Image 1 (cartoon, rainbow over the protein chains, first blue to last red):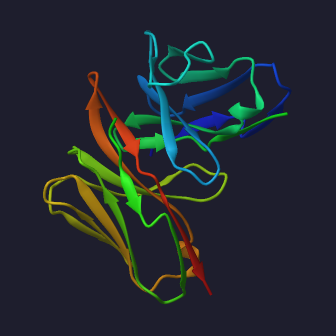
Image 2: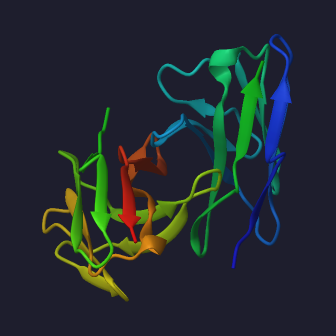
Length: 113
Length: 113
């Protein structure tokens, strides 16, 4: 089956710093990667869609300069939370479509202190 | 904005009881998936339904896709403590030329032993 490896699984950072989250497709080429955010006890909210070699598409209300997405290769998409603040603390999950369906990463728990 | 409303939001039942979770929308979806998510982990796919009126069974779980492909239900028979978790429906919809899954509001189930 298709596997998406997401790192780090947990990160604690100071307010004002930037954090990069990586999602790698291990055994398939991910031309598209979806990035979701999930607040405690809530559902997943789609933030943006990244496409290899082109600009990401952001959902309404998501700041593109705050959440930088790079999809430079067919196996790697990254989400960088810039100048993080406590309100950015959340669970971030990526998902990539493939021949088996949509495969999710294991998620990244970001805590900004 | 397309919304997938799930009901109930929270459900606490005794082991052995039956339950039904509903997923409703005013939009038509190409397909619909159901996921279960454990705390701190990514969602795990349970089933995908594609055809209006389709019914799929997975052991004690029965999934139904509405005739108009706007709604779905998940029925669990003789619930067990291991069924505890966050249940999410997700509808596949084309947006700006890209198919993406939009997640429902979630149903948090707790099965007491």
